[in-house]
Length: 104
Image (cartoon, rainbow, N blue to C red; front, side):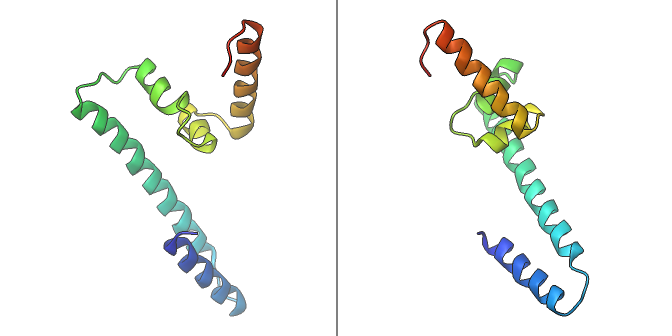
């Protein structure tokens, strides 16, 4: 748990025990997580541009979707799909690879 998340959790518990509205804390936590996600995403693109790489669909797919270093939750977000659809995509890809004899 990150220090910010821990601080938010403590604040939510305090507000719950005091009968106060805690939703703004949750919303701020979600906003912070999304902002950090966006910053990290754009950092990757800027790094590629600094290295004079063309940002094409193939680059995007290789860097954000077919990259084994990225967590599956993040890959699903980058692909614009939910986690269940991502898991189905991975399963289908494995089945196709097995059918033609490629091991992944």
